[in-house]
Amino acid sequence: MRRVFKFFHLPRSEKTIVLQAFSLLLYYRVRLKMQPLQKPIQSVQRRSRHNLANAKQAHLKPERISRLICTVHRRVPFSTCLSQAMAGKVILSQHGYDTQLHIGVRNDESSGFAAHAWLSYHGEVLMGEVHDLNRFQEFKAFSRQEMQ
Image 1: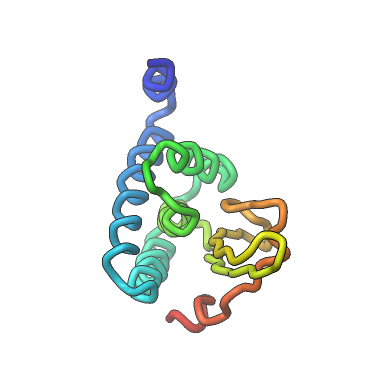
Image 2: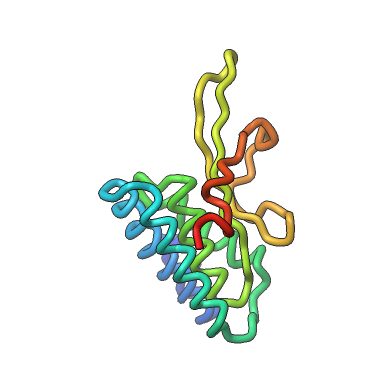
C-alpha cells in the first residue's frame, strides 16, 4: 500500500516513466523469449534512433529516469538485465539521451558462466552496474554500428 501511495505522489512525468517502464519490461521480456536475440535488439536500436530524432527537451536527469526504471524492474516478475537495459534505452531516448546498450559474458572457474546487459551514457553505467562488470567480455556484434 505504501508503494501505491508513493506512486500517486510522484510528479506526472515520473508516473508516465514508471507506467511505461512496466509495460516495456513485460513487452521485451516476452519478445526475448519468443524471438532470436538479434530481432528485439534491432527493434530497440531503430526505436531509439527514431525517438532521438523526435526527442523533446529533457526535464529529468538520466540518473533519475534510470532509478525509476530500476525500481520498476525489481517488481516485474521474470524481468532480466537485458529487458531492463532495452526498456531503459527506449525510454531514455525519448528524453533525448543517446545511451549505449552493452551485452557481455563471463566464464571463469570460480563463478562459472554468466551473461549480463547494461546501459551506459557518456561512458558511465546507468543501469546494470555489478561489482565485477570489468570481468565481462562485451559482444561487439551488438554494438551500435553493427546493429544499424
